[in-house]
Image (cartoon, rainbow, N blue to C red):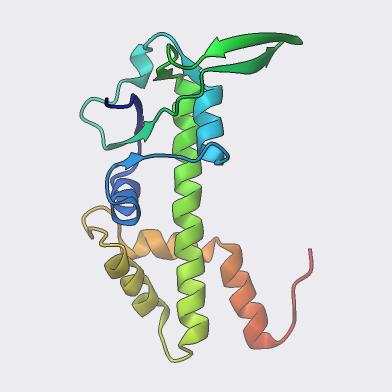
Length: 171
């Protein structure tokens, strides 16, 4: 029996990343995973026209069989059977897509930091190319400039600077 899934519109690069790391475009989350908690909290019984993913790059998240679960709404406790809640709200779509972007960026930043620390002679652009090659990302979907912008905004870049200068940034 096939399990039910919800689709989430994501950037094509995120989709390629998920396919490479997961083996398919369907994610089967663990019950303790934040991703599943975001999905479960935003399931609804009706399909919203704003959540249509036709023609968009999307991934699928398998719905776990949880039976009834408690949902606290305005102080009262409701029991909801997730079997009949098989659509994501628009807010849920956005939250899940944001979590997947965050996971991608964290992986990218950690990979580049590890590559640069482990190989002192490696140039930043070479580390980006290694990342693209390792996760089989299409250069049609992601560019060096996009990765550079993300890296320049990251905390890992600040950590790398502090390691070179010898001073540690404290927050």
